[in-house]
Length: 297
Image (cartoon, rainbow, N blue to C red; front, side, top):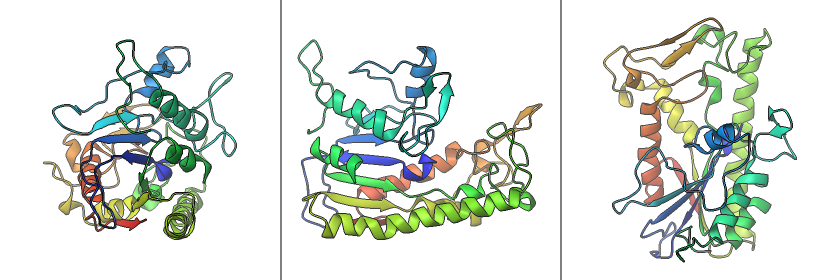
C-alpha cells in the first residue's frame, strides 16, 4: 500500500545552516493515497474517471491561508506506487492513478502552468520519481515510512478484533492470522529499506546535491498510540485502539460515539484524532526537532 510510502516534497528557498536547514516553510507538495488525499479522487469519480485539468486548485479540507504554508495535494485515494509494479483497477478500463504515472506528472505540469491573469499556478521553485521532483525544484523531502497496518482491523489478529470479513476485503482468506503477520513482515521490511537506503541516497549518491531528506517514522508513532492511547487519544468514552469509529459488517455500519476515543476511523484509516497527532509531529519534523525523524543531506 502506498500508505507506507506517502511522500511529501517540501520546497523553500530560505534556509538555515544546520543538518535540516529548512527555515521559512512556505510550500508543501504532497503525494500519496487515501491517507493523504483531500478530494482529488472525488474529482475522478465525478467526472467519469478523467483527471482534473492542469491548474485545478481543488479545495483542501483545512485552510492554508493567513500566512500558513501553501498546500498542493496530488494524493489520490487508492493510489499505488506505479502501474509497473501493482496495477489496480478502479473501474472498467481505468486503473487507480499512481504516484509515478499520474501524481508526479500532474505536479510537474502545474509547476509549469501560468493562469490567464499571468500568475504562476504553483507558488514554488521549479530513484526516478525523486529525480523528477528534484529536477523540478524540490530540495526538501519528507518520506513517511510504513504505518503499522497490521494493527488496523483490516489486517489485525482475530484475538485483537481483527476483521474476518471487511467491506475493504469481502473475499478475505480465512487465515487472518497469517495475513496479519504477513502485513507486519512487509511493513518492517519496507521500513528497513528506508532506514538504510535514504542515507545512501542523501550522503553517498551524487544525484541529489544540495537536497535534504527526512524519514518520518510514522510506524513508531502509531505503534506508541496503540500501546499508550491515554497519551494521545482524548475522547470521553473508554479509549479504544482496536474497534474503529465507523465499525462495519457486510450488513450494517455503526458509528461509535466520541470519535476522539478511537485510534482508527474505519478498518484501514486512522481516526481524526490520530491524524492530529501525526500532523502535530509532522510540524516537529519540518522544524528539524522530531524524535520520530532521521535527517540526512
